[in-house]
Image (cartoon, rainbow, N blue to C red; front, side):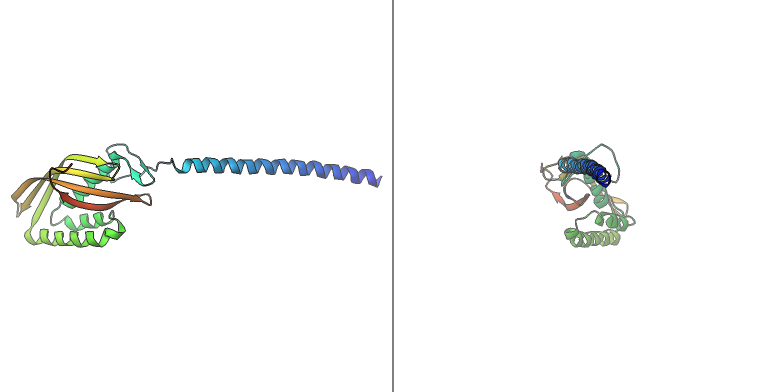
Length: 188
């Protein structure tokens, strides 16, 4: 009698263990499947980020951004640097420094402070009207061509065609300004 009861208990335990083994196998299979899916998605995920203003759709992935995003950021950076008055130069400088690459921050800060002091001293304003934006996804840069108008004491002193190179780096889910410099007007 005891033997039959023990035999039934043993059969029931074996049956329960088989059920638990099947459940464990299913969980392991699910984990492996989700790991494979995650590893496949790692290289192909595009992160959507928002520039200061959105005019066109764009994409960003790993360390590159689309030409549309580069155009928007290039025109925004050109506006921050080149479209200034004595009253707006300080806050535009602060906004610009928020986008500058960390290792370039000191150089950009000094450059912008010198320019702000010069504009205030001579009471000058500059207005940049972009006419062409030429992005390069390979180099993550934009060539911005347009007219730079300079006013000193409300009198126009120059109105010249200028070309600027704006280089970016993309890291940590954020676009950083690497270089902003004037280049010869005929440069591609």
